[in-house]
Length: 211
Image 1 (cartoon, helix red, strand yellow):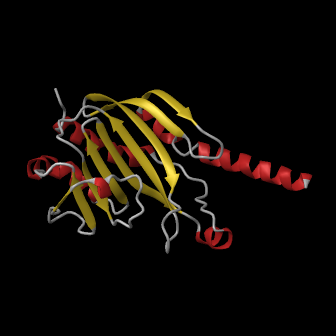
Image 2 (cartoon, helix red, strand yellow; image 1 turned 90 degrees about the vertical axis):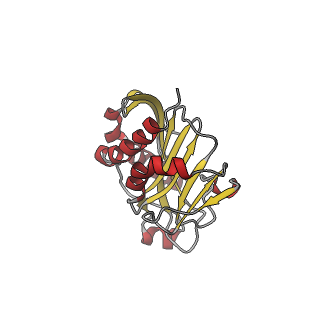
Image 3 (cartoon, one colour; image 1 turned 30 degrees about the vertical axis):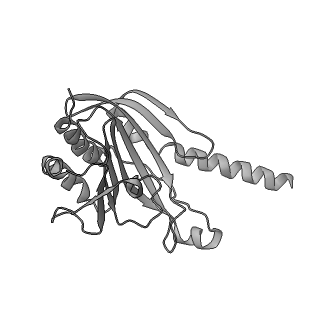
């Protein structure tokens, strides 16, 4: 029994260290960085950022999605930006919905809208206000840039900021099939990858900046 306890503790420590570096390469992009990690979970980063010449607060974290069935669990990266946007309510774009995206407010939004023709058509566009045509045309360029990434999952715009969700990994098939547990192996998010997401998000913030 003592040996098993020791092996489990060693495994957890190895997993914690392996996951602790997920966002390490991205930290130089920000100021006033605070990084925390609970147990063997992926770390959470909170920092100040300069996007499109605007100051904002940003939070980054990753979460394995174990609710989906009939596919290997994905690992989502969440980019949450706090800023004041000139919005009348909430606007949400959800790509390839499965019905278990608890991070999207889509199911609770009253209005469903037609997608722009060049957006991924396997998507749902919903809002809490009826007239979104003007804002869609304003945001067409940065939204299209984000949606061109086939791993983009969700973008939510709110009066107090925005949240972007993108898949950064998928569980090892062998590990999941044998142990029914998600494992993503050693993984680090490249700073260049995150920058390609922050640039259009910054453009959205600049376009919708509220005085």
